[in-house]
Each structure stands twice: as C-alpha cells, then as structure tokens.
Amino acid sequence: MTFWRKLVKFLLRIGQVLVILVSFGVTWSAARWITSAIYRIAEPPFSAYIIDLINVMLGVVISFLLVLLLSLLFRPHQLKTLNIIIDGIRRIAKGDFTVRIVGFERMREFETIVNSINEMAGALGQMETMRQDFISNVSHEIQSPLTSIRGFARALRRPDLSPEKRNHYLEIIESESRRLSQMSDNLLKLSSLEADRGSLQTNRFRLDRQLQHVVLACEPQWLAKNIQIQLEVSSLEVEGAEDLLSQVWMNLLHNSIKFTPEGGEIAVSLTSEADRAVVTVTDNGMGMSESERVHIFERFYKADKSRTRSSGGSGLGLSIVKKIVDIHEGEITVTSEPGKGSSFKVAIPFRWKP
Image (cartoon, rainbow, N blue to C red):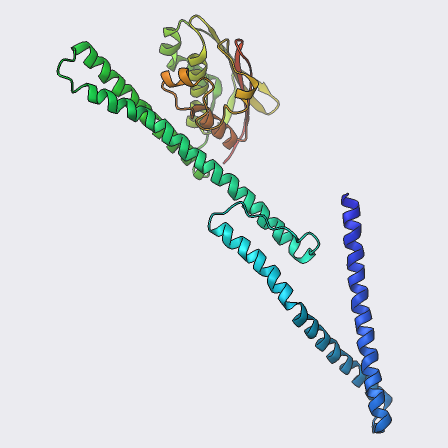
C-alpha cells in the first residue's frame, strides 16, 4: 500500500511539472500570435532577436496574469480550507480535544498540517482524561481519611466516652492523618521526579549493601508477621541516585510484606545480567490476576482495595517505583498468579547519568 501511495504521489508531481511546461508553451504561443498580428499591421523597425525577446517577455506577463486570475478564482476555496483548519485550532485552544479535521487526504499541501493537528488533539485529549482521572482519584483518596477524622473527632465530644474508646479513636485519627501525610509526600515525590531529572545527585555505591540495609530497616514489619526473609546478593556496584533506588527496594519489600500471609516467605536476590544489575523480590502471598498486573503501576490503583486501605496504602508506591526505574533507564517486570505469590524483577544499568 505504501509503494502505490508513493507511486501516485510521484505521478502527480510529474503531472504538475508537465502542466507548468504546457502552460509556458501556451502563453508563449499566445504572445507570439499577438505580436505577429500587431506586426502584420505595423512593420516592426527592429531585428528578429528583439522580436523574440518581446515575445518571451509578453509570454511571462501573460503567464503571471493567468496565475493571478486562477488564484482569484480559487481564493474562496482556499479561504474556506484555511478557515476549517483555523476553526479546529481554536476549538482545541478552548479545550475541545475531540476535534478531528477530515477531507484533506488528497490535498498534499495541507495533509501534513492536518494530520499533525489531529495527532495533537488526540494526545491532548489523552492528557486531559489522565488529568481528570488523577483529580478524581486524589479527591477520592483524600475524602476517605477526612471523613474518618471528622467522624471520630465528632465522637470524641461525647461526655460518656470511656478512656479506652477515646484512646482508640485518637489512634485512628492519628493513623488517618499519617496516611494523608504519606499521600502528600508521595504526590510531591512523583511531581518532583517528573519535573526535574537533571538535578538528581548520582554516585557509585554497593547495591548489595543497600539491599541488606533495606531488609534490616524492614525487620519490625516482617518479624511481626513471622515472615522468613531469604537474602541472596552478590557484591555489585552501580551508579545512580542512591536515595531514589533505596526507595524502590523499600517500596517493593513493603508491598511484599503487606500481601504475604503470616508465616510466609520473601526472597530478595541480586545478580548481574550483561551490563545490568538485577534485583528480584519474590513472595508467596495472595498474587494477582493478569488483568490486575496490567494496572499495578498506575497511580492510585489497588489490586486489593480493602486490604490496601487497612494497611494505610494509597496506591502510589508502585507508581513511584516505576518512575524511578524509568529515570535510571532500567526495566521492571512482574510475574504473578492468584494464590501463588508475586515476583518483581528490576534491572538497573551499572552506569547511568541523568
């Protein structure tokens, strides 16, 4: 199909060249006919060379007048065409991203412009949909803890409330406040990662030691659920943003601990693969279906909404993980089956500069 399309365009260009050549021939012939008619009435007092020069100049004038006449005839159609494009651009500027300009497939001079406008409208429409979904998700996530805080704060006004219930309500208010604060921090982190990559501070460090520190930092969480941690790491150095990569391993390990049952197992490994360091975090928790795996890196997505909510999550942890890995030009993949656990594999280049 592409070959025939190129062939048609090539033939059209040849046709345009032939039309131009024929037009020049016709206008020159007309000029010669006019001057010949004049010279039959009045004998010219100059040479044949001057006569031919006059014929050429007159032919150019006639060609110019013909082009001017044709442009005046086609001007309303050209203005109509431009007005369609301008109207589409104005609608896009006002926020109507459903604009699609059609009918320019055979107008080669406008086809590229129209296709670019349609592509821009489609991309802006997708961004607007993402923006609206983001606002909706943020509003929903904020509304839930605020409702809890407001309800338990109202309950604290009851004079007959026992000290035990009062302390329980205060703990809930404190927990929901922490969740709001964590959500705000995560949103700010995502915003800063997307806006300013060039200012990231990088250094060379031992990735195996960083993983050991992260596992030790999470010790209270996995000991509380009697989870067995298997750590197998090789001595490897990488170059990157050390604090951000620490956040990746912390989020992945917290996620595994959250969805691993009492007495479960989590394995953390570090190996090398070509020019990349590969970190794998595997658990034997509840797992995910294929439809859930497709969305786990989206903001505010929660595979198990009830459990994530009770654990204080906001659905932003894996979004931050994906963003940090992308910034380091790495790759993250996940394999999982319902009831058989999940395995997150992160590959980070040994050397990386923002």
